[in-house]
Amino acid sequence: MRKLKQLDDALGCIKDGATVMVGGFLGCGSPQTIMDWLVKKSVKSLTVIGNDTSFPGDGIGKLIDADLVEKVIVSHIGTNPLTQKKMNAGEMKVELVPQGTLAERIRSAGVGLGAVLTPTGLGTMVEEGKQVVELDGKKYLLEKALKADVALIKAYKCDDKGNLIFRKTARNFNPLMAMAADYVVVEVEEYVGEHGLDPDQIHISGIFVDAIVLSQNGDAKKCQGEA
Image (cartoon, rainbow, N blue to C red; front, top):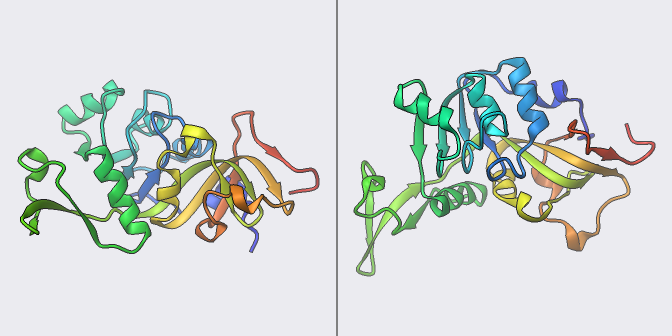
């Protein structure tokens, strides 16, 4: 099945009210072209799962700016004043999750686990409303796995099968999210087509990727002869 697609074909399945994961860390490793498409198409009432809400005008921040987000599940919102303003005004729900716990909840969904046990947050407001499990004399919070309808991720290179290579810290959250959603779209800087990638360099197998789109931020490349 051909995975390289135009934006409308790859992303047209994302409807109002969808739960989407967005990779990256403070915009680094976030699929900027895909964020621009969502803003252009005004796909709204989204629940967005990510490490953070980046900055105004960057990454997930673009969706916040455009009033497309109903709820975010993130580790912090400190770098985006608009997110804070919307939360305080009751215009957007914010679920804050410790960063390591957030990563583990996403990973749990990707590997088929229902939840993860962690001591992080015990005795704090993080514990409110959650089940406490005692194991071998120690207490843990039961944190449920996080899964999404769609994962929107960014990669450095990919081939026609969707095998992915990430670059340095842009790998943040992207590999985990690629495994934890029903439908996965990757925005790629360099598409090598049928030329393939060195198997020893692949970070995520193409079996997790449903669609590939080219970055339109001026850095996308594709091999000559590829559509």
